[in-house]
Image (cartoon, rainbow, N blue to C red; front, side, top):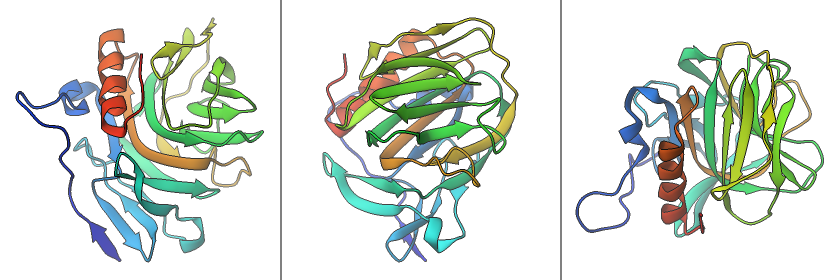
Length: 236
């Protein structure tokens, strides 16, 4: 196994640029491909949680480990997924959740979540999902949707028991509004809907921010602009 360093600085000037660490107690997990990567050859066996909450994502089966890409965008690395996945456990179960991801998502029918919060099933959980020509924030099959892109992008999903919302590069999609029966779960699956399922992500993930509850609009915009600046992605 080979460890990849603890961090990469970017940007300049004073004061220091905003990062998700400023979310404080609301930050449930934070995965950054510049941080805490353990390689098994050229594949990722372990991805440390940068939030300090200890939600390490791992994969012990070599054939299911995503590949490490040293320079994905703006000279920054990412994890490449093609049916591969990582598994993690949050420090506390989440019902309502916010998921923000920087990556690319291939336009495949039934392409699964960039990240799923569910105990092995999406039936009562929430995820960020790529369907045919759509990016989706899904909460127990209640979908907020927006037209998709094959380009590197920032996707945000806010999912609660009363609505789900999605944004692509800071632009809002069509929400789902209504009662949603979400079940609390501490489990995160990165790259797959569930371990036994066939629906899996094709694409790359550079960074994931997970927050407990419905993130405020102000904090969501800060997260999106932080990722946009870091990876050279235009965000509204």
